[in-house]
View 1 (tube, rainbow over the protein chains, first blue to last red):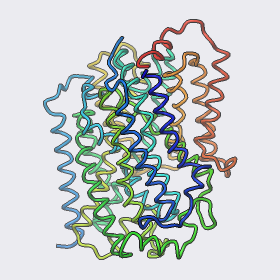
View 2 (tube, rainbow over the protein chains, first blue to last red; view 1 turned 180 degrees about the vertical axis):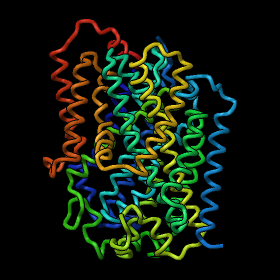
View 3 (cartoon, each protein chain N blue to C red; view 1 turned 90 degrees about the vertical axis):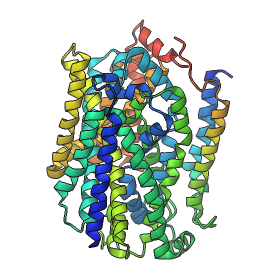
Length: 73
Length: 489
């Protein structure tokens, strides 16, 4: 995989959870009920997607073709 | 021994340890090296880097302001953990690239980065001045936090001016002597302390007031329906305001010179791993929000001076907690404020010296530059201190304006990284207009169109101007622009 391609995959796959945190998509999470794990739905929604984001970045790091960015100038 | 005595002893003990760590970290390093002072030789490890970036987020705002937002506004406080988790993510891609450009062209600041790409002294000077003013504002809020916490935890026995002087004085000493490395190691200690305290004390408060987290939320949704939704009836923020607040914080985050310049302080792999583990910091903030939620309906807002005082108020007045908890929370809040203040003081001195002083007075040797930077730490420290203790209204408005302007660096920075067509006049005009628009809607105008955040309004104008002016001011050959674009991609 080329570097540009990785950058594109990286940006797009993290844009998705980000868009879920702001409007218009945040309207899906913006409610008080049901309670999940003792948390109101809106609070749970935000925490849940942060954890998913964390996992996505971990996976992205695994497929990063150039983790060290070797200096070739 | 009285509660306040225990608290005071613990906080002073904390300050001594912080000083010791800061000074020790800078020891044995080359004191005469400009590179060591500015970017810690470019070799900070993952553990230190993680706390250095994290310390900047854990500020007086998160420790006192986050509970305050949750207490007074409800759901909008979620924006704080949202932007903390997401704002770092672009760094994975742009951080290594900025670092490579810096190593190739010997750059260690934002102003240096833009000056080289746009070959414009004016732009660098503008960045230097805006950064200085914005940093002083940032420092003033941190210092107010420190002084306030000293004051309340000792039940008024340490006056405002002394608390600020003690805690910030220590920051200035270790930054001026040890540079970035000292700031970084202090942040590790301060970061661990804050995390432990926010979880233990935070959850203790929730359990004392409501029994458990879920009971607290049950009570809250029963008594205040809509409080935990955005834009509902009874809510304190509209969807547009919520969205644009998240956007402006997320875009602006990496434009702060003290974070941007960390790209030069380490290698690509460390940058990537820092981004990797960073969202965890957002989760550390959760108990602080819970503290704020737990006080709703328990504490009458008229009892506390301002919402930001809710955490200390709960500990000292509303709950019967032992003196060592006073001390712990005091130390944690000091740590939060100091770990932000050290990085900001350091970068303000670097930016102003590199962007402004070096363009006014040419041919400074690196030895003189280093000396100016060290002295700059003291001068900026003193300025921020006097403004905090004696600040006047007009001055404060000016600083607030600068503070909101940092996000306006974004078009120039991203264009430098990815476009070869954007020109210096375009970036300068965009920056100025963006700053003015932001200033107008933040401090002058009564309402904003569609309730959009002032910074985003400025940014929209800024981007449009950059595009339009660039198309009129094309020059044929800009080898440096091509060079920037190609490095690391």
